[in-house]
Length: 198
Image (cartoon, rainbow, N blue to C red):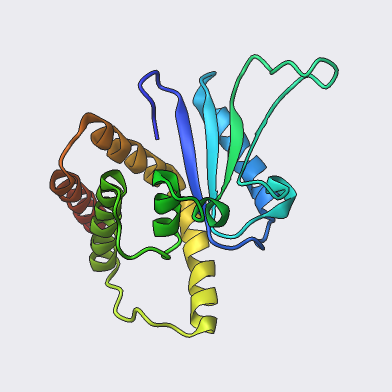
């Protein structure tokens, strides 16, 4: 997600607390890549965790890590950081953020907050495009098939991460400008169609 002043926030959705490499190592690797590509601008990481990772959250709903001077506690001149969010803890709150967290976890079917409803529509539109583009024929898989598919997807995702980050930035820009969900969906369809032709 690219902000108006060209700072960047990389958003990661993490379903499992146990990964290889562990989340805390993966986050540092991605953090380094983000800073390396930022050309001196802020490059934050936002990790939305479906399951709590105790090593980084330490029992809290939120945790932010940034470079600081050990002696003084003063922040490093570059203010990039890694921000972790416990969706499970947040989903228990009766608030817009709580409802959004519950939606992202698949716990909330009937949404009340208008802004969360808009976000859910964007997700649904994007998922429909993904399903059509990838020709997903079987939605119900065995546990073994899911783990195998997760490995395949992870391998592909590493190769496609840069393009997806650019695409996510463009969608975020559209949302910020108030572009209609249907227009965003058409844009995503055109991108998917172009990738299929390539």
